[in-house]
Image (cartoon, one colour):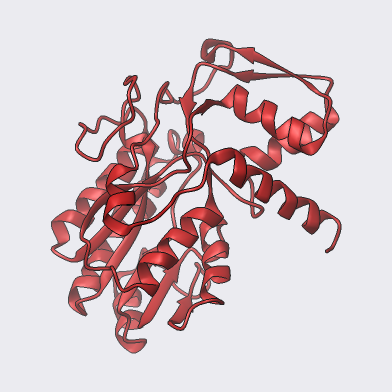
Length: 289
């Protein structure tokens, strides 16, 4: 099986490189230098040349605040380019595994969101990601859409790496406590995708939710990061309104993973377990191990 991974320099893309090392399948890794997914002809050409059976789209415009001022670019990457990948997949009868987000929901629930719940994004990022989902569904290609949330890893910029730095440098750190969700280790999401690919379960067409198990606030998340890192910073809870933002973020975006677990027979790790694993990876990187 020939598998194309886009956005291979990002958090999830880097973890897919790791996953590929344990697989018997053939992987083709691309980022912007190798493939501009905003060019339909380029996408079609590569998919046909490499005889691609599955596209795993890890590419995305993920700067939530910046998207408010750069809607054109966010829409091009999160919506238009996704439509091109879907069209390419359909043209060669391939499956598109596309990564989406909890931001497609308004975030006013108090029970975990299922795949059937009404989508109602409040900002440009969420709207462009939902438009991307719709482009995939409407393309007629075979697809698996995976909505995830609060993604972090040892790669790139993310909440965990920021909190590690700040809780080491500061004596007191205010962090929002009234936004609730579930952190997701990119390594776990990559392993789940690898599970689907290695077991040839790409025919399970549909939208699925995947994050780690458990629930916490950003404050809880930061406090555990500080504790696991051995940083003695006083992490203090604050309200959302005390931290102004261009974007109205979901107050509650916990995802119900029942459909994913039952369809793919996959056991999802708890977020604390995976966070400790990631922090150990970051420490090893920093120590040159």
